[in-house]
Structure formats: C-alpha cells, structure tokens
Amino acid sequence: MFDWLQSFADWLIYSIFEIGADTHLGTALNFFVFDTLKILILLFFIVFLMGIVNAYFPIERLKDYLNKKKLYGLEYFFASIFGAITPFCSCSSVPLFIGFVQGGIPMGVTFSFLITSPLVNEVAVAMFLGMFGVKATLIYAGSGILLGTIGGWLLGKLNLEHLLSDWVKKILDNKMHQAAYEAEKRTFKQRLPEITRGAWDIVKGVIIYVVIGIAIGAAMHGYVPENFFNQYLGGDEWWTVPLAVLLAVPMYANAAGIVPVIQVFVAKGVPLGTAIAFMMATVGLSIPEATLLKKVMSLQLIAIFFGVVTLCIILSGYLFNLIL
Image (cartoon, rainbow, N blue to C red; front, side, top):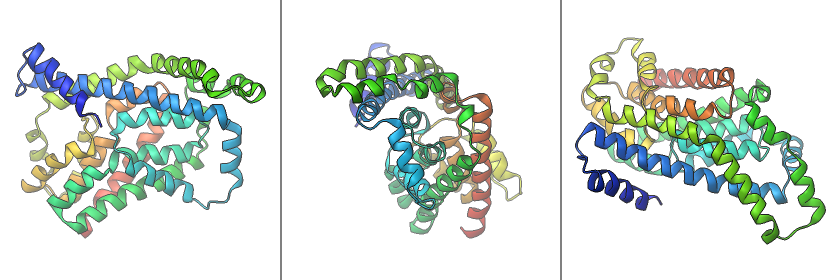
C-alpha cells in the first residue's frame, strides 16, 4: 500500500541528500521520512472516515448498542481479531485508537485492538512460518490475539475513561455537531467540508507528537546495534525474559521488521520464548508509541496500559520457553 512512500523516502534521502543507505544516519532518516508521512496520511483518512461514521451513527447510538448487546466478552476477541488483520505497527495503530475513541467505542474494546494490532499481522505470520515452523507460528499468532483479548478486558474493567486527556474529553463532549447533522438531514456533499475540517483539526493537534515519536523511533532504528542484545539474552536465567522486555521498550519496529532480527537472536542462542517476548515488547511497548499516546491519554493511563501489557508479555515469554 505504501510502496510509493518508501520509494519517495529512498529517493529523497539516498539520491537528493546523497546519504548512504548503509549508514546509520541514512537508515534513521529514511525511516523517519517514511513513517512520518505514512502515519499522518493514515491519521487523516481514519479520522475522516470516523467523522463520516459519527455523522450518520452518533456516539450515543453506538455506545447504547455495545452496552445493551450481551456479547459475553466476544467484543474484546473481535477487536483483537480486527487488530491482527490490520497491518499496522504500534505508532500506526494510534490514529485508529483516536478514531475509535472519537467514535464512542468502549475503552476496553479499543485497548484490545491497540494491543493486538502491532503484535500480529499477516506479513509477520508468513515470515514466522518460514523461519520457525507451524507450531511456533500458531503460538505466536494465538498468543498475540489472546493477549489483546485479556488485556483489553482487564483494562476495560478498570473504568479508565476519566484518565483520557482533556483533548479527547473535549472531542467526546462535543455533541453539538451530531445534533445538527441529525436535525438538518443534510446531504453528504453538504457535510463533507465540516467533516474534512474536523479531521484536519485533529491531525494538527497530534502532529508534533507524531514527529517526536517517529524521531525517537528512527534514532533507535538506525543507531542501536542488534549485537548489543545477544550477549545479555542468550542464557536460561529467570531474569532474561523481563530483561528482554525492558531492553525492547526503547526500540521501535513493526512485527514484520523485527522477525528477521528474532531469527538472528535464536540462531545465536537466545531462547525462542525470550526472543518472542522481545519482539512483542518492541512492537507493542515502544517509547514512540507512548509519545503519541500522550496526546490522548494521561501519564497515569499510559503507565497502567504499559504495565498491564508488560506483565502479559513477560508471562507469555515464560510460557513460550516452557512449550517451545
């Protein structure tokens, strides 16, 4: 979908600025240009689409449906499945999170999507299958979906809506435009300018967080050597799994990008469960993601979210090492 953006980033950094593709600076800048443009484009179109949804299906109607229907927890599972089939990294998932919150989706269900989306995607599954076999692939994909389901359910039970940022609360409290839409029965063409302005206003509100978050991720992507981790994670000591998760947090990559690194880890003696825990933490607990989430969550909510996901990933890592 975004091959043209990658070609543009390659042309800009490697041809126009003549920075070598094999240099740390070139790798970091290429990553920064590509991911910044990709995420801003995704953010605008997702929020734009959610604006259309809000115009015809107001927030309260959606909330009432989800609250009245007895889905017996399946809503968390379905959100995790949706997250698994959307090919987004953690920072790319944040625009969808904003759109879901704006659209009135319950917090726990939204968290299920946010947790699973970066952990599992079809490209990573295909790569995992080729590198580690069917058993490891099924465990990886199944655990990612299960992690999102359980994590979202747990976070939903904590009733954390009051810890959303003031910016999001303002969006959720602004019901006047919805009333106008329903009362006036305007055509889509008449509503389009207002929907577009609303989407652009949201993009402007988060753009600085996008740029800062991707800049941090680009620096980590370009300058942190992979051999740095092998020497600390190769043993069977109990602390290697928590250490793998902690070391992964400053990193930033999507699942497909980190799978080849995991293959190197395993080849050099890192247990597969520890390596998978490192991968999940890299794609699901990155500092750039936390930077982007700061626009929509308070620091307390970010800490709770990261804490729950970290605990689940560590427990998953121990389980993987027992069964793989």
